[in-house]
Image (cartoon, rainbow, N blue to C red; front, side, top):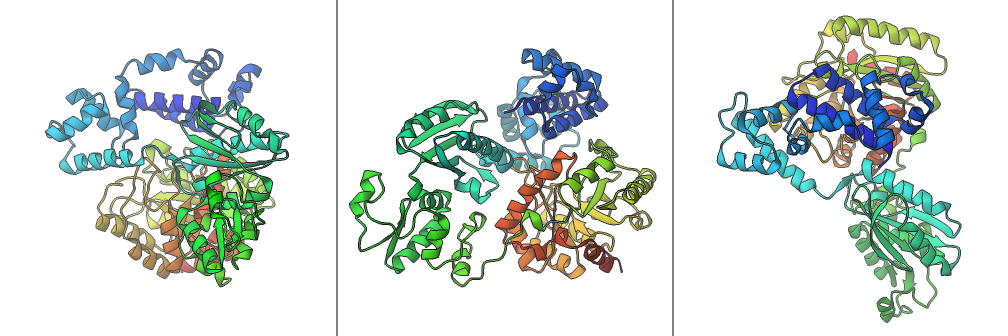
Length: 591
């Protein structure tokens, strides 16, 4: 974990403790903002401390300067330690349980003396939480479900956490003079949203270098513990607790190995079945003629001593099986092999297809950059348009805009847009969908906006009927162009609304309302299954970052991964429209 991320976690903990204690709400909000700034930073905060330029970073106040400087210089913060010592240590892990916010944790602690997960589980079982003000059976059942969900998610890391670790390791491997190729494989390469462990593959320029590469790999700075080390394989546990297995394979077998270790298991089974039907056999070493393949070779752990029909590249293997190349994200046995055999695979959306981002925040609400800075960053990504969509008034913790502030903000966005050349700015808003499905502003205010992303942020424990009716009411508004992060889920932390998606898809398609794939981690909402369902039902999608900083705009890649897993093409995404086409899309619903 980088120093920036360590400090981001430290400030997030401090904000959580303050909320639990019920003290200084404004400082808690400030610390949460500092956490976000540090997490999104593209440079090492240590440099700013050493150069004395920390005060130049917008959004980091004097009290935060001291915490950062102390931690950089000593590896700890007295302010943090004193604050942490003021509450039982077992309270903070409770913040990760869906349904448990700081106010509820504080209530349980102060009224029932609960200081750990074990005590909470016992209290839920023996009924000692009953009778607390504002805590009914529905709330208690929600907490039970949150605990069960956390247990179910244990041991799996989200893609947004696993991918940077794996990418850093692969980058180090590629820098080694002995290494010819190095790639991420496994479920991470397929873009699965949670990862159990990571598979890496590399080939060497010299077969004799296996021992040296393996020895160097286990000493990489990301590595905390060595599980095993040999000439062809090394296994480690990283600082973040992620198991990573490196396999060293011959260059002539690299494609077959990459195909095999990328998976999925079900995809590979189907491929092997197709190979057998063609008189061939497929394994991690290559594709071979069945009549020539020595089955005893499997026991040696070495490549068969016969010529492979295909082995060097994945493309070659697919081609010899009379299949189109199947992108890694599609390899889940969801019809991709049949489609590839009939040349009917979709041309998956790519970053180059995107012409803009339709959901981002500035320092007018809880973002850290100005309108101009966000627009310039979008231009640097090659975007033709950008929607500024700060929070609506109900999001007080996110400095949501009152109607009066919103109208002034619309003018400010338009003013910046008039000055900037090369990009079009849309004055938008992320408007809260309230519990009953009504929107956070009156229609007269909504009509002033160029685009509206309507999102659920509160009451995320509604039953399916109430939750679905709520989203449907927002879809029916002529002013709502996009339903943002429709379920409100947070990966590995919160399940989100249990929507009846068949009804959602039908209404969205009928009204011309786009459903969002929110690329901001840990949302990734819609997930790949729901996104696939949406396009199959004729819905359009929007892929947005929900960025709160200029760096956050780069999280679009995670959203694209979700879309690619859902078989999404550029034609099904409104961000891929021209600016005029986008205005037409918005205008048709408003009429």
